[in-house]
Image 1: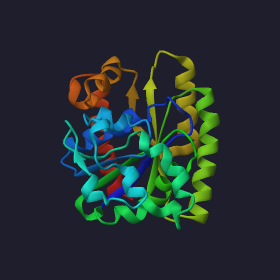
Image 2: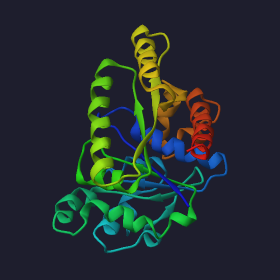
Image 3: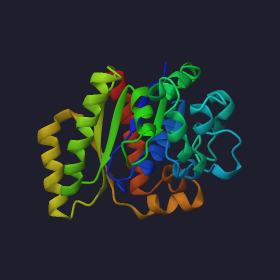
Image 4: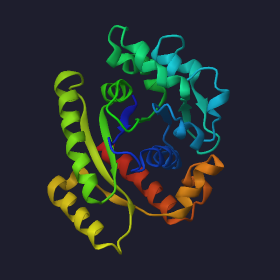
Length: 256
């Protein structure tokens, strides 16, 4: 049965989509069966996986409103060795439509039951806000992976996210927990980043992943070629780090 993880952070621009796409590819390197679910109307994880979001007949939108099921909507990634449940601009209208639907927070969870047995990991890329879409992701997940930059404002946003996770755990999804914090876009030459990193380790302990994702130009270039950084340049520091992160995730899941 698949382990379902949200990649979430209420702060924008912290590498959620980059992490979701490259973790999917990194897990695939370790022979894991992976489904990436794009819950962001921008569809960046879809495009970054080499899937043209404009050409999709069925997306996560059709799944959430009950027009399609997941097996009919899943497509293989262009590269990387994983599957994608894509998103496009249609998803922006889903929030309005979901308001009138019963059990609107658990639509994704119910839909994923049809494919859970087909995968080892299901990764959900959430939008950078606490919306009904993010809530669907959190209600469907066993845990949350939080990518964050080691900066002061990132710590501020982390407090809000932890409180949100606690509320969802208490009211909607008792299985939900924080799987770990991933330090991304890390530059060890900056004293502040090292200080924040040390703070995270002292406060969250083993909830902080050992793997650190460095700031890396090749990772930033990869989406414009419609491919994960792990595939775009396997020798880049960022790609190597995400493959290592995939191995750490597999190990952490075995110890849950």
